[in-house]
Amino acid sequence: MTTFAPDNVLTETQTELRDAARTFAHNEVLPLANELDPVAGAIPQSLLDKMAEIGFFGIMLPEESGGLGLGVLEYALVTEELARAWMSVGSIIRASTLPRALPAERRAELEPLAARGKYLGAFSLSEAEAGSDVANIRCQAVRDGDDWVLKGAKMWCTFADQADYIVLFARTSPTPDPRRRHLGISAFMIEKERGSFPVGFQATPVRKIGYHGWRTFELGLSDVRIPGSALLGNEGEGFYAGMVSLDIARIHTAARAVGVARGALEDAVAYAKQRVQFGEPIGNFQGLRFMMAKMAAEIEAARALTHHAARLYDVGRPCSDEASMAKYIASEMAERVTSDGLQIHGGAGYTTDFAAQRYWRDARLTKIFEGTSEIQLRIISDRLLGRTAR
Image 1 (cartoon, one colour):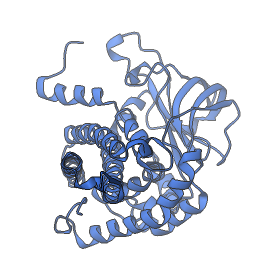
Image 2 (cartoon, one colour; image 1 turned 45 degrees about the vertical axis):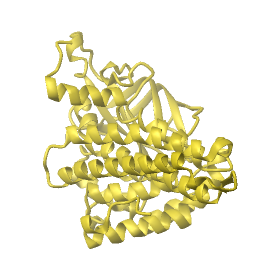
Image 3 (cartoon, helix red, strand yellow; image 1 turned 180 degrees about the vertical axis):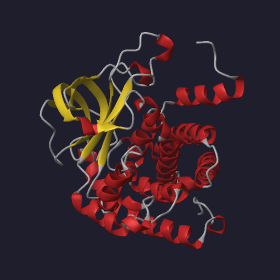
């Protein structure tokens, strides 16, 4: 069964990388996912070390820094394969992405570490009242001599405990004009010890229904003092720094959604071949056969759009619309396909004995993070019709 991009649309290098990721995902990631996800266990450091050795953390980092020097399409290919086994592992490779606003000397120092998985980061943008409405950030950063002092709360910061740094967004100046609320937000790079939090942080794990393997936190900041050098880029321009990385993030999410959906389809096909009802395998029943045919078609369509957006990015062409479309189509598809995959498993699909429920739970998240489906529709419609007066 072909449920992946044909070799004739990929280069030899891309095909080899995809196949290496597929083998690794099947042999190393999938057994751990089946063991650890039902008990909300953590991705072991030994797996991260193996991923680093292969080069999965350095896909888009330059070769002179120990990376592979490849593009977003290769990043998407690896992501799909890893997410097919466990979406959290397909997600964690993003932790090696360094902030764009880093000074050149500091970037040259950190890139080799990031490529080896020795310097990984977390991203703290959202707040309880600033999800889709990112410009509503209220966490404050106040100058105190040469330092900044952070006060407030952040939400949905995944990997905050195990990261070596957190990129955190806070308001450094008020913006009384409600139409320009995005101004006055700054980005900071807070370096920390892996496995702990800086003084003044109160970290509360979020009780998630899925996306296991790593923890997501609500962060309270009480007079957290950081050096002036922690400021990324220019003061007050953090909103733009946060938005500039979203094209890659949305392509990455689309690839994750395709991978999760593919896992649901492949497991459903295997189950349908061996599950016998009414004296024959349920895969012989036309209703289920057509259901799986639709699942396969939707996966292929979402993958094609995802790869198209990635190729546009890699050749330097504008791709914000295509990235939003890919993210929207793939995430909506993943929820439908994983739900159908669970349905094909019947009652067994509603148990943790099968991975069908894991794909279903994780797929649901892809419609929310990196901009909800509704936000993607807003972006696409604004390009078609122009922005509304509001």
